[in-house]
Length: 462
Image (cartoon, rainbow, N blue to C red):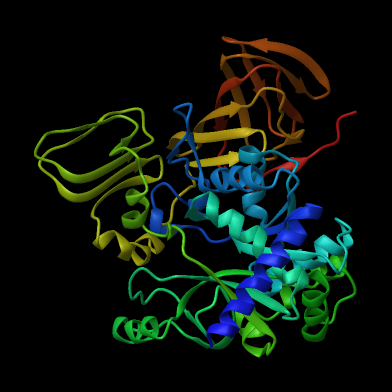
């Protein structure tokens, strides 16, 4: 047993050393899904938890989970190729937060992780021209981790490229008997081991017995040679290429990658990871990662204990004598919850049906200020150098009041410079857009009996 463990560890070290000499760039796919309803009111149907800016950076600003992970990847491998597998609703937020250089494999609709990974694999091969022999690492977009995690991801990809195993998983060394994760049972205690079996999410007592056997958390992190997953995808799905797979995507069966591929693969290994790893899926776990007790305008008296406030509104939040509580305020609503109870928020949020009040777009963001019968008022922020699509609305008029910055409007083909204080009116049916020469803020008033996000027609301006 000791000799076996030594050989596997030595093999892994040699693989990584030889690969590092040739500096093979990391090819990584980040899975970005979900609506993040457990982090309401900061999250909504278009703003998932990974886009919430809650982590403080060295310059005092805040970054989101996706920004943090993206930055950490390139701090380990400046030549890495990153592809994000996501839905159409998240593309604008991704472009807004990390730019347009990142590759994006867009799911036309939700079909679980196997179709998403198959589509991403086809995207890498057919669009990005990645060789079938290259290794690919797949992981969630939103873990709370440090530098050593990404160093391990690089090693995982190097192992997948050289190993005779078809899949190499990362197994997280558990810190407590969790009922939230599946478990990987390795054959031995080596740094790299064959997988003996997988176990579904257990109760805590069963999880404790798994841990005694050296079991590892299955954090949904794995690596493979691209050709292997493409081959499995063609075996399970009838498609020709990336374009064809996208066209028939809504007909695919919803199934996880674990069920479709992992549990049927005999040649599979697991690599241990013992560093810090947290799933920021609830308010309770998210506040544990906050460096300060509050973000935004918040006041807490001395009688408060273990209280965290995240306030996105421009009004103060005052907390008095609270203990083990999270308070969050955003345009979507206000949450006041015991931290433990905050984990059970989802069914209550499912019952809330309202207009989306905040969203990030590729050109900036918007925040709904007021909704009345027959009108809606929105504050629009455009980033410098960006513009809206040239478009029109059939059932509403719009009025723009520029409150900050400089830019240009194009109304029915006529371009005009605008600056703070200017007012522009667009009647229904009139094509229009606005271009931000500097950062630009505009108050948009929509007037009409049927105000709807679907009332938008794109035009071509030449």
